[in-house]
Length: 333
Image 1: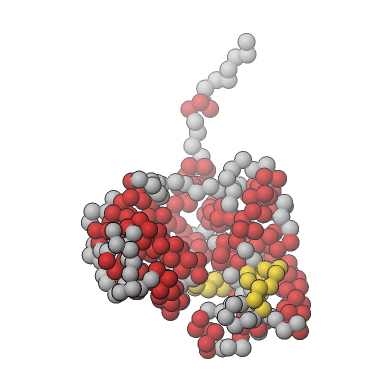
Image 2: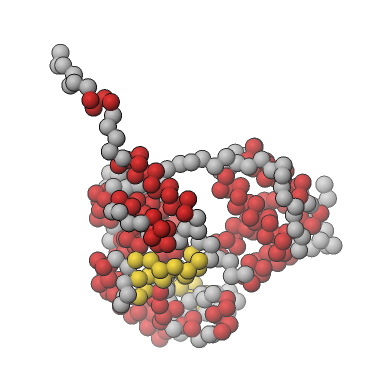
C-alpha cells in the first residue's frame, strides 16, 4: 500500500490540522490528545493517508477493534468519534452511515459503590490537598478532571455551590459545596494565594486559559480568580511564550493517593476516584433525593444513565430476604 505523500501532506501536517480544529472548537486537551492518538492508529492500521481512505476502511478498522482486539464498546465509540471528527471537521468529508459496523458489546455493569462507613474510612486515610480533592469528588459528585480543573472563581462560598465549567459534553452546571468543606477550602485557598503572590513577585504566576478568554482577556492569566484551586507543586515554562506557569494537580497523583488510601483502609473493593462519584449519587438516592435532581447534579444528559443507580439500590438495599434466611438454624454436631 502506498505511504502518505506530499500531495496528501505529511502525518505531522495532518496532526497539526487536527489539533487546530480541536482548539477552534474548544475541545479539551485530553479529547484532543485522544483524537490524535486514534487517528495515528488508524493511519498505521491501513498504512495510507486518510484522504485515500473511506467508509469501508473506517468500518474495517472499527470492526478489527471489536472482533480482533475485543475492545470495550466505549473504546470503539471513542475511536469512531475521533475518525468522524477527522473526516467531517478536518478533511471536509461526510461518511455515510456505517451499516456494516460490528459494534462492540456494551456490558451492563453496575458501578462499584462504597458504603458510608467505607467512604469515611477512605477519607480518614487522606489529608492535605488529596484529602480535600477526594472529599469534593464524594461531597459534590465531581468527575476527576472537573475537580482538578476548578478555578478560584468557580467556588461560590456565599451560595455554597461549585460552578463546573465545560463538564462532560461541554455542559456547565452547579454542584453542591459541602458545608464541612467551606473552612478547609478557605484555608487552602489562602495558602494558594500566598504561593501565587510569591510567583508573581518572582516574574511567574501565569496559568493556562481557554483559547477565547486568552485572546479576549490577555492579562487574566496572572489574575487570582483564574488560578487553579489545586495547582501543581512545580512550575513549567511554556515553550511558545516563555511564561512560567503552573499546571493543575495531575490526575495520576490523585488516583494513586486514593488507591493507596483504599488499601490502608482495608476496603475490599476496587476503588477509583470515580467510585466516590458513584457513591455520592447512590447515597443521595438512598436519602430520597429525586432522580431528576441527581441527574442535574451529576450533569447527565440522559436520565437512563442516572437510573443505573436505582439498580444498585435494588440489588444492595432492596430489603429482599434470601430463602436461606428462612430456614431453621443448622444443628450443631
